[in-house]
Image 1 (cartoon, rainbow, N blue to C red):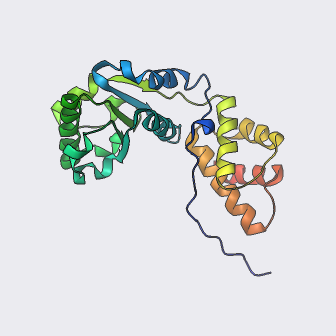
Image 2 (cartoon, rainbow, N blue to C red):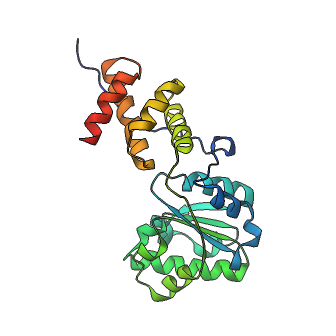
Length: 224
């Protein structure tokens, strides 16, 4: 039988409020996002591991606050005066490290948002002090911001995350398979995403459903 060609097609990720699962790992961050009108100086930094749900939670907040979301990577090319006319989410601020133009743009946007009185939400991977921001004035502004963290996942959150990742790829799995995977996988959001992607590819390549046997084989391959 000829080998089936596998294509990495873009996925439609679900970012609705109903798709976000609240657990002890993220409940404090959720509460801070829900009370955004009370943020000190109208700003908050949401940080956590890659794939921890920061973007999802930020999108929910953006819908509530009427905010526009922009990637930190393109912030230097945005019309900042226009951007600052409404609430703003700047995602992946850690990627601005050692980027002079990007850091200057965020500092300018920060000042514009403060003058306009609109809330500003920033997201990033890891703690703010580890982002490597060179611009002293910006580093000072970030250090003085309220923070909300996404903690490492518990079993319940990992289970729901796996179900969501499978659903995004239109793969139907049974609860016993999820329990099997959670007990054996590396406990990180990033690994969960890589695992589901690998299982999808293996399933398509072998033209077989995702089973415990397949999951066990892929887990061993990934962990080796």
